[in-house]
Length: 145
Image (cartoon, rainbow, N blue to C red; front, side, top):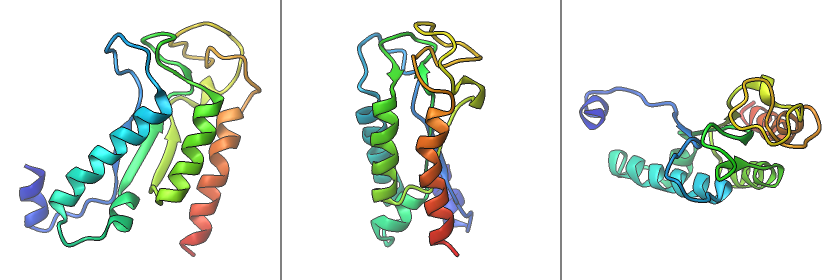
């Protein structure tokens, strides 16, 4: 269906991957899983835009992470190290959007708690994920002006 929409002129600015809540019952490597999901999406975009080079297609990819322990539990924990790795990787690839779910979770107020609405479940400084992703956002905004 999206191929038909693109064929008649629909413009796709960003396709946002929500890279959490996999619920497959195994220990996830969250940074690696994010990169794998984005590479799969790039492949799909290449089939929709066969004459486009990879750089603008990477820019059509958005990524939304969930900081800390997601709803599934400890097997799906996006750590501070994952955030740092993904921020660097996203910048290198030219990802168009990098964000995370639920700003109010960006604190260490409930270590060990899964899927909390008010904290990450990690022992972390308040605003760690915000500060880690901030240079990506700031860098991208400067590169476009």
